[in-house]
Length: 120
Image 1 (cartoon, rainbow, N blue to C red):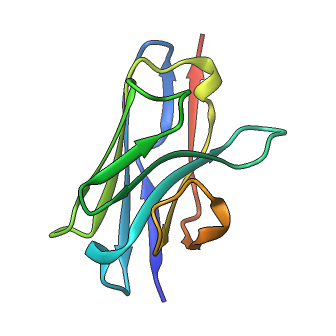
Image 2 (cartoon, helix red, strand yellow):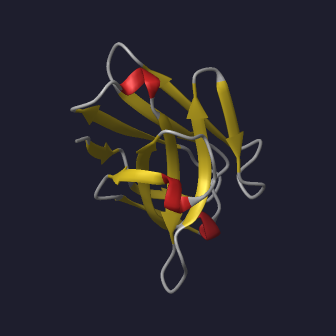
């Protein structure tokens, strides 16, 4: 079993930055594929970024603005978000699985989410 707890969300103006954190417990964090997803009001949950070992990849909508990273000593996953846009407003979730993929169904464990709101 894996427990994931996100933090770091909040309200920010367009063009600003936020850093999300996701602390994991209950499993070997360093061997897991980790992902960030988000769900905007009225929309489906979508992939944002993924990380396993030294590999990372991003959704086209955030490429060049967001950076995913992890600290295995602290069992923590991060999402650095820069140049935020109003369309980035969503609940952001971290997730853990075995395979590095954008496929939501491949992630077995999920956090409760943290709200990010970007004002124009």
